Image (tube, rainbow, N blue to C red):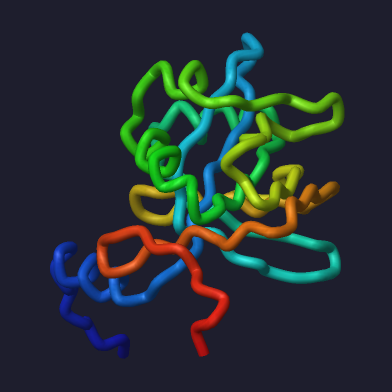
Length: 169
């Protein structure tokens, strides 16, 4: 016999997770018409090294998720510490967000690269998806990586953005 467990309130769970700082990334891809799509996420996780696989959690109904599923590819732009305003812009849902920042789409890229705001980018092929509640977990096998050295990562926790400090220890 399975025991029925009580559900916790959304606000309580959100508060719990705010106490777990994490990196900040922007998932990008292109829509069928070639236009860029993207959204800020803090739910990125390394799954396995062989094959090199990441997972990202995207909100159901978002144009970015729809475009990722249609394209079968996406880029994970890991933001550096000076990109707080870009994280906020892409979290806002502003329709003109790609007009407000520099980006490029290299020939073999899985999605737009945020050239001034990302300290690393992983280009991924969708390998699997799983619907969970109001989000879809998208597994992506990384097929290329670009890194810019000399930048500290942007973190999100306690409902605020912070820059990783190299002297923390």
